[in-house]
Image (cartoon, rainbow, N blue to C red; front, side, top):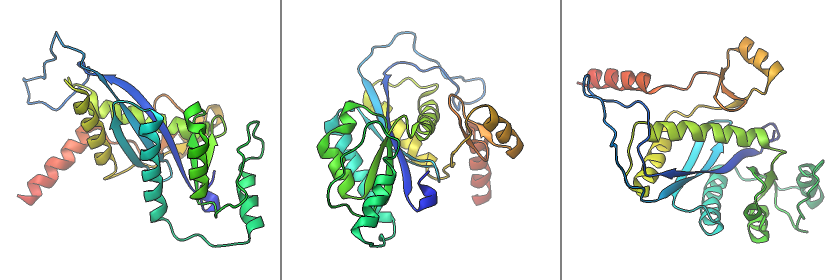
Length: 254
């Protein structure tokens, strides 16, 4: 999409709610001492997950929240986008007409156009979003454009958003399967800690599509991710392999 044109492409989505209840699944336990789920529990609230994903290198930014309203999402997104822009090289300054043409190129074919300001900075980043009303508020859209970020609403960038949903499912399974959180804060902490671990060795995603892409994926030995057309060039590591790696490294250090 935009990576070939020197633009960094990120996708943002919210996931949840996740309840304070026992979650079925496997967990690391001593042999003959399986984890036991409570047969009674009290639902003490829910948690949600804000996600910002960069499929090109697999980097993931996550925040656990109790509510995903504009008052919560927008400040966090501004903070994360500002941090991402700070890691990019300084943009090359060109004439105003060329900069405006680059922005307009990303509106071609849209039925719902975004009104571009008269003065535009160099385009540096594409933000793929679903078309919720809260994502189209004038103050947020203007802030993005002032910082060189072009919002791309679905269905135009649907494949990128699908990949974000795929990584959300991976994080949620790793964080909550086999657990019985008692408070929403425990869920938030587990989601953020799991995302932090993911970023130690992130897995880039590539879009594989449907029929023809499945055949091509098979030829190129890509690994499909459940629930979408996304895929990886190497399989996502499972807990067992990560545990073996950790045990091996701990034995060598001692």
